[in-house]
Length: 256
Image (cartoon, rainbow, N blue to C red):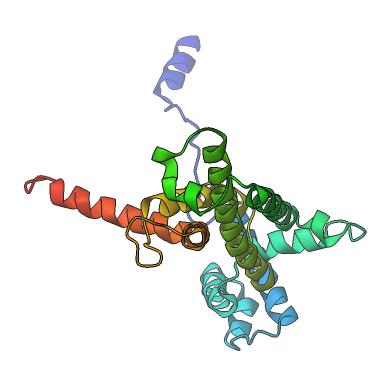
């Protein structure tokens, strides 16, 4: 009896448990699509943005394909805003209604404070008798000491005012259009540094003759160059990057 039972057990095939994994879109992704659609619909209705009527059938069916199609249509309707920027802007506006608008929008507040700092620095350096046409004519190579420091601070403050003016206009438009996102803070802070550097470099590298004299640069000319360098720092970076890319293409080996 024991031998027969053992033989039957040995002949019986062993069964192993297999784990099956479902393929396709996860329920979390489907829920995210539905949340984004509701977010965009609410934004469109609040801002009187026309919505395509074909969305009605797509939303009612609630299949994954229909949700994706509805999502794509709404993205085009509310462009340039996105669900991410809409949620971020709404959270800032609704954050503690008792706070002032500047406390709820720290990026705008910080940019305004920074612009005031640049303005104060501009006024105080401009009041110094060591900041004049002659000292600016000398530039970085021929000037030295306190005079050089004050002149560089003067040009840096003008560059900072230029980039602050550009960023305040950009941020105001982003808040109005609902395109502001959290990552913009890092970009704007980096652009301020680039703006000050660009303004200093442009004002010192580009020489504009004043009054027909090839060896003279007026205070107005250098100030304008610093202002334009700060304001267009993003464009200057793009131009320089394009030049470097072209040079790399020319210097690359033909076979590579």
